[in-house]
Length: 386
Image (cartoon, rainbow, N blue to C red; front, side, top):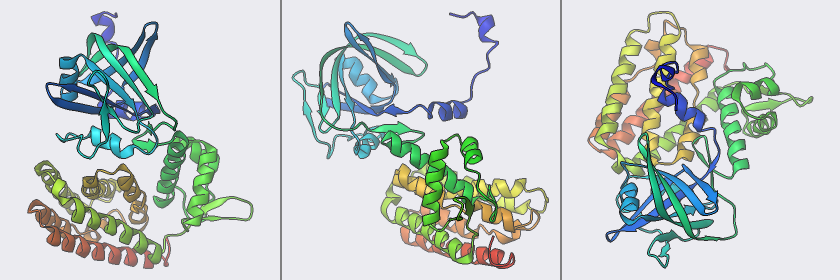
C-alpha cells in the first residue's frame, strides 16, 4: 500500500483515456448467470479470470448496481458462460438493461439450479468463497465446482468490436485506413505510405496493406503497377453514393427502432442542434476550428440516431462512410456557416420527440437532398474532384 503523500504524486487518468486504453486489451466474452428467489439473472462481463489451480478458483468482478450482482450475493453461486464465435447477439442481449433477458434464450439448469446458456463454448459453475470491494465493483473469489467445454472458437472482444481475434484486428485496421482515406489524411495523387500509416494508426503494416486492397476494390483507392496506393478523388458520384448509403441506414433505423428513443436521447439531440446553430452563426471567424467543431457535432447527432439499432457493426459502417474531409477541403473557414444548414435537423429532432416516424423520415430525406446538393456544388467548384 502506498501512503497518502505518495498517492498525491500520481494524477488520475480521465475516464475517456482509461476506456480507450483498456479497450486495446483483447479478451474473451463471458455471461455471468445466476438464479435466486425465483428470478434469473445474467450480465455480459469482461472482468473474469482464473485465480488458482489448487484449489480451482475463478475471479469475477460485477458492478454493484447490476441486478446480477444482487442475485450472486443472494444465492452465493453463479456460472461463467464463455461465449462461442457467433454468439454476439447473446452478448449484446445480456449487456442490455432490459428486465427480460432470458426471453428467446436457450438455456438449461445445472444440478444445483444455476442457468447455463446453450451453445456456450464452456461453462464454469462456481461457489462464492470471498468478496472484496473495488471501486464501483465487487470482486467475487469463487471455487469451481463443475466445468464443461464443447468444440468451437471463442468470441473475442477488442476495441468495441466482437469477432475472432484475427477478424477483429483486420476490421479495426480497415476501418482506420478507410477513415484516413476519406478524411483526406493523404491527399489524392499522394502515395499512401503503408509503414507510416500503420505507425500512425497503431496497427500492423500487413493489415494496412490488406485494407488498401479492399479499398481499391471498393473504388476508394487506386493501386499502381509498382504496388503502391493513392486515394481515389472524391467525385460527385462517389459522394452521392456515400451520402445515400448513410441516409438509408438512418431511415432504416428510424423505421425499425424509433421505439427505443428515450427522453434523454431527445434532450441530447436538441442540445446538439442548438450547438450546431450557434457554431454556424459564429462561422465568420476565419480559423478552421469552428468547422471542425461543427462537423464533430453533426457526426454525434447522426450517430446517436444510428445507435438506436444497438448494433456496433451498423454504427461502425455508418461512421466509415463519413466525408468530413470533403467539407474541410472545399469550404473556406469563413464561409461554411452559409453552406451547412441545420434547419432540417431541428425539424427532425421535433419529429423524433413526437415519435413520428413518417415526419422524421421526411425531414431526414429533405436534409439529405440539401447535403447532396451542397456537396455537388463544392466538388464542382474544385474542378469536379477533391
